Length: 134
Image (cartoon, rainbow, N blue to C red):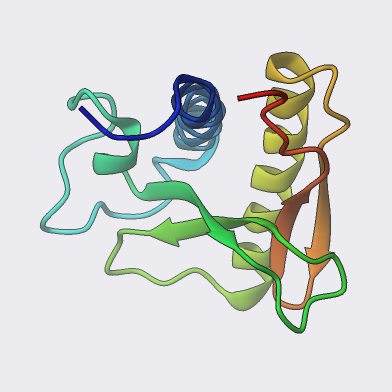
């Protein structure tokens, strides 16, 4: 038992669905461009796309102290490869992942008006995170 409210658990599951879809699409588009890190399974070989391939895409909640947008979820794009992409390519991939995430959020949470905003060095999901009456 997690101890979370069922609406919070449903939110977390739906957000994880979006993250996994973005991870799989980034792997499909770019996963063959660099050698896989020595400690990573090949893309598509584990139950969780964050655990295989060169991309490990996730979100991390932040209260947003010092942020232009306040609280939200930071989009975290990590790479598991011994070959580092150029800063320009990394920025391009982060932007692409943010665009894919925006599309996923619109599909999964159409009523919430969630947006990805550039907040410093990161992209942040902002908008309505309310759970309604709990």
